[in-house]
Length: 136
Length: 149
Image (cartoon, each protein chain N blue to C red):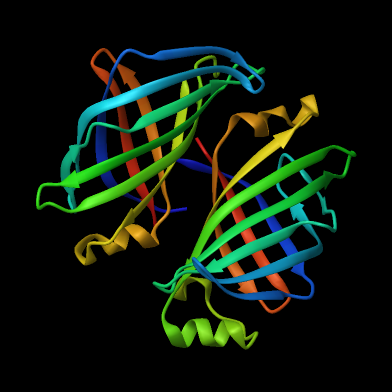
């Protein structure tokens, strides 16, 4: 399987919304208030207003469901979603992987509409950072 | 990104259902009649009854939404759901449409399988994300699935 770097995505989240224990597990929502992304083919900022909807499952893993809007430095808007899986108790190191997908109307970035991607996430002091690679 | 071979999965499509033009594109459902999977950590057969719900978008990208149940050779049931994309040059897609054998490197056919199982022996599948490359054959696709490490 071959991968090609797409971007590094840094997210800023507002205080979490702890919804408590629901039918699928413990639900926590992370409102996204900003951020930045940078790669060889695109760069820009994360618009405020998205969220990452997280559920801690009965087996302890966290399922993530993110929806945000990216704005490139030349003004294009890109709808981005990912589903993700976070296992802080994985042997060796935490397992934090995502499957980003993109939609845009801007022809310059239409290549994003046609690719699947994987991300490696990391929680840092100033928020999560995702290294996203295209599945070539 | 690092990945590790998980399995090959071959499914047989029976009686394609052409739903036709819908609000998001052209929809067709491919019922899965069976199949098999094989890897170092698991092997078995695909139960009949799943399907691949496909949508050909306006930009020529085929969106895939496969759901099947796997049964391992030791009796565990595994739910597999996989989102994917398939697209390529028109002449290549036309050849695939005629059921011809095409080099899978000539088009983009990638999916992201997810697994769910209640069997402790295979619980590692609940804890991983995966990616696959597809090879569309006349009888149905063959997927090479890698675990994302």
